[in-house]
Figure 1: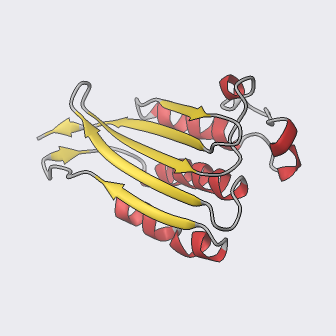
Figure 2: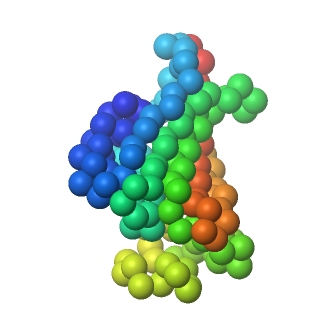
Length: 149
């Protein structure tokens, strides 16, 4: 799943002049996710295209995937080296129709992408969160529960 999501967007990153890297820890073949793949791809796409939108040529996007044992979950993190998000805007980015002000305001968009991503992730029993500082890029992570067989 992770390689499929990553690979689908390689050309978009290349066309934007963005370095695009995958860093994936060893994942046990005994780990199993039960997800709606189309919806998880929608989550990934919303996060990825935000990273592209707020990065310039020469920036990078790194995708990390790892399993956490407590609780048993897969965590996918998309980190960009773009403009970042201010401390005052960060708590609101997953709200419907919220558009970040200042340096990110001229980017277009409806303010729904991350709110939809949050709803999808929560429906799957996971969580989504962001870490950022203005001028220092952004990391958006989401977790999905795994089942050991």
